[in-house]
Length: 316
Image (tube, rainbow, N blue to C red; front, side, top):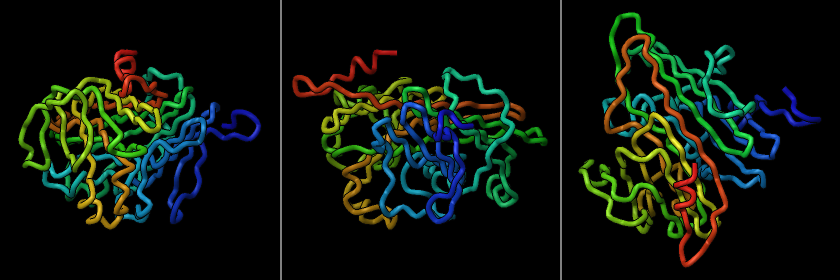
């Protein structure tokens, strides 16, 4: 698999507490790490070696506790939108490397990727009695973009459909939450999880942060930008098959109440999550759903007191 003298683009090794992880390295210098526990991306670095994702310094890398940070996968349930434990069980299971995945039609020329698969255990079937195959491809693009493609198939033999909600619960690393703005969600409707999922319409020009936020924006565009004024960096999310977007920051009180989260770490993270929550996805036996997320980090110019994201949002 080696590309060049000593760089192995895909390497299986041991991570924290001896958990198996895969390291992806792109020839341009960017990298990503994926733990088999949770099928979870825990690191994404640009070609300068800067970490772009947030993982709490108090994250517990020990099953059955979910890893606090990176990109947890919420399936088959987002948050408490159903009868399962919060965010479902995919992020608490050991995934397998998929050695023989079906062909992945992809828009990327990436050759640096790993395919993982999750199937339900007997215990899973007791709490969620549906037969499925969840295939996940994590890829690094030539420019350092991070791409996650999920394919979920109903493999039931009993002829019954099932429904699920889903999110890529992405924790972005930011310089200072008070210096960050999110563009692309203005004027949209959202469900406010801090107010019993009541529906409101976003009023501001952009979303800025001065207190706890936990909102599910519905019918969102395929592209969303996160502008980090201090780092002069813009994250761009491109998503497909995921109509909603969750924006979350716990702020000070909630941060202090979480054992696996530092008291002040809320200042340096922001979750913007590509999701399908408002309308659950239903699959009949044999049917497959696909949800794709592509993340890129680009330098953003600072001018006239604010970053100019329109070029980012309007560019392809």
